[in-house]
Length: 372
Image (cartoon, rainbow, N blue to C red):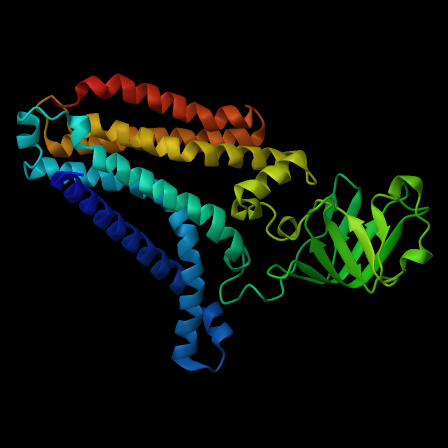
C-alpha cells in the first residue's frame, strides 16, 4: 500500500465511525426518551445506576442490529464523503496530473467498502444469531424474561402449538399445549406439558419439541400409522417428542424473527417450510437480499465515483447532490421491489436481483464521466 492508500483508508474508517456513532446516538436519544418509562419500570428501586445499566445493556445489543441495518448505507456515504473531501482540498489533482487513473486512486475506498461488508457478514452470521433473544425483547426486558405468543399452526404436521409463555434464550415453552389432529392420533387430542424444549435437527435426528411431563403420556395415546413418525416415545415414559420444523423464533415475532437467523439456518428453514406461503416467500426474499447486499454496496460505490469526481466543470455541491439523488433512487427502487416481492406479484429472487442489475448498468454507463 502506498502512503496515499493508507491515508485514504484511514480517513474512510474514521468517517464511517463518526457516521455510525452519530446514527447510534440519534437512535438512543429518540428511542430512549420514548421508552423511558419501560426502562424505569425494569430498574425498579435501583435508582439512576440501575436505569443506566438497563439502558446500556439494551442498546449494546441494539448496536449490532443498527450496524446491520445502517452499515451498507453508511459504507457508501463514507466513501462519498472521503472522495468529496479529497476533491475539496485538491489532494487528488496531483495524482491525476501524474497519470494515476481515478479508479486506482479510489482503490482504498473499494477496499474499505469490502472490509465493512466483511464485518457486516461476521455480525450477521455469528453475532446476531447468538443475541437474537435480546434483540426481540421489549424495552426494559432481557432475553431471559418470559414472552407471550400467539398459537401457531404448523402446516407440515397440522399441529397447533400454544402455551402460557415463551423463553426465547432457552428455546422453551412453559405451560405448553399441542393440539394433535385426527390423522395422527385416533382422535383430536390436546397434549399438555409443563415444559416443551425445542431440539434442532442433528445427526439424523429430526427437529421437534420434547414435551416434558406430558399429559396424557405416550402409552395413553393411540397413535395412527400416519403419526408414528410425528409423535414419538422417549426413554422417559413421561415425555413425548413431537416432530416439527416450527422453531421457537417462529412462535415469537415470527414476522421478523427470521432476520436474526444465520444464512445456514435460513436455508434450512426454506428447505423445511412449516409456516404459511407468505412467510416462506419472505424467507426466500431475505436470503436473496443478503446475497445481493454486498454487491449492491459496491455498485453504490461505483455510482459515487463518476458522479462526485465528474469530468464536467460542475460545482462539488452539485455533484454530491446528483450522486445522493442517484444512490437514493437505487435504494428506493430496491426497497420498493422488496415490498412487491413480499406480495408475490414478482418472484422474490427477481425482486432482490433487479436493483443490482439496474444499478450495475447505470454505473457502467456513468463510468466515462469520471475524471482522468
